[in-house]
Image (cartoon, rainbow, N blue to C red; front, side, top):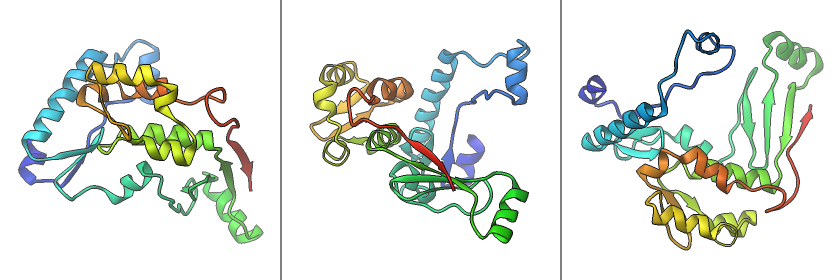
Length: 218
């Protein structure tokens, strides 16, 4: 970190190590030859990171992303804000605001389909209102702006004040979140529990618009 600060790097992405199945670390962890750090250690490291970033003038505009003022990543921010984007080539992902598309990962199959069959081999996932609401919850709670409860209610049909009023008040009372009639924003302490809090607020077909995402091959 000292080197990054000395070089005045304008943007830093800082993620905790995630052990994925099938990777070298994943296989070693399964055999007991690699032990991931305990959650308490990871939390302490995260708190130290926040302190150092703030001391050196970096803004935390998303849980894992920090920047000098005005140097936010437009690419990353587009994902968190639900902005449509186009991905080109094998294994590319795209989003049009309502549907996701991901192309085949195999280079040969991709080229063969485009050149010989004249179409892009892709799977289209049609997102329901419920899917979009949950994705918005997941992404917005990671950002400095927080979750716009008015947008969630008026556009996606989910009223968190009505459905989770007790839980929201508890988050505010315990210092895990800032809460207003229109915004739910996690504090530094709350960011340590962001995944858990998001899961608690996730909508099911019993609590919001029914339906599920439907993958369609094209």
